[in-house]
Image (cartoon, rainbow, N blue to C red):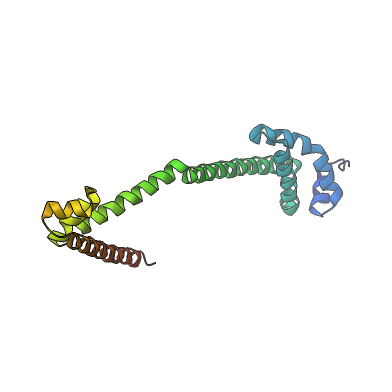
Length: 191
């Protein structure tokens, strides 16, 4: 569609909301604006969408347009800004994808699991040191050294049933202490 012949008529037609004025401006500037946008964002489809949106913004701001130079400047500036916004959004999206990939990375997950295990073992050792002396010694010989109840009984010169009962007592005391730690942990985090 052709534009009216003089600049004043074009501006008045556009400001009056005549679609033919917008169609004429579209025909005149669309290809150049798409080329301009493609040079920035490197995507034909995205460039076309951005330019169409720029014309939509021109239409919404048509009452403010005073000259063809003003219109041309508005279209190029709006297109450029939209391209920059598009690039920023793409960069943010890529950054988020990288972060999610890192979080999902099995090596990182293994490190988190290993850290949790190490902390749990640290708590067990701390609580183990708080056990009564005989109970603690039997538990260490059994769990840490891997001795059987009969070997522990022979080493400490006590009965096998005493070893079994002390191991059972140690496990119960440790379980109670660790559950208390967990409760304090969750209460501390407001869970």
